[in-house]
Length: 340
Image 1: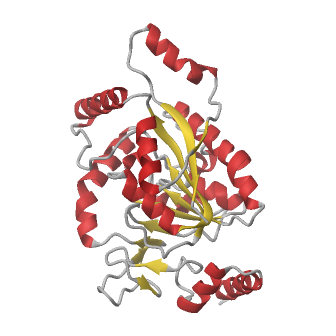
Image 2: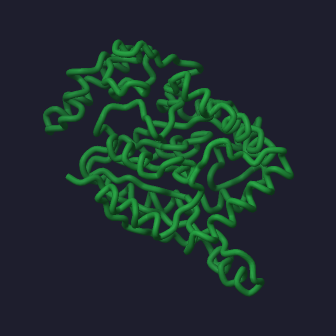
Image 3: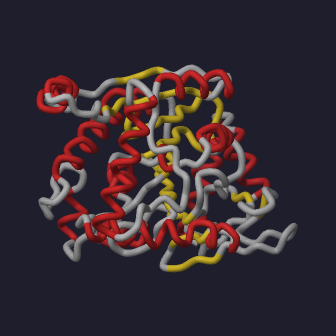
């Protein structure tokens, strides 16, 4: 009951300040002590009905809980992603993405204790610092609290956001204990009451409309099968004037470079792991043209931010050109706001 009382007290405070989203939550959500998502209202990911708790009276789908993770993938979507998840987990394990050590997870993104993916974690760390210093901190002055972490992986960003005082909600397809949502158990000594975690797809999020103050595609937007569908769904869940952020998705100046990257990656995976990992037709990268198409189709406008990833990273395009190699990927942060 302690958690329930804390939520009601927070909601009453926000009721007095006119927070209609939380008022609606109090009016239409059943609050149960055994729910790991006490302060968010759910939507059935199968039929889209707004529901109270985890059971859908309209279609009969029930979101069960396993190790604290809300399983919000209907059976047909479990089948759809089955091969992708198996291939992805096997490749990620071979790449050294997980660890038995708690310190490995606590050090992310600033230290890769495995030493196997340090350059990539360096990029992630720079991107996260930029988010905190230049985007989320400014918005927090206006009451930013709930953040949806899409593509949370081992939940390092949700953990960092929780330590910084935000209320993160972690979403991913993977639930394993090394590189998926189950790895959040490594943070419990520092954060005994873990943030809510959901196995769900970005195209059908299990949340009712307009509940999040910021939504971050956490190195995950390029896994989408349809960018318009994924972004529209994020905007649906965002509160008015909330930020939707695409972070750490590769960008190329032209489609040919992107297509070449995809071809090279699939050939490499086939040789090393025996699978091209292409059972899901992810879109893989962004270009300026793709970003413009999203603006036109969704009536949004992007603000583009370019964190500094270091001199070596900045020199990569020039080095590639001198050696007549393919254009390397570049990373930027894309931000749009939901219209008021």
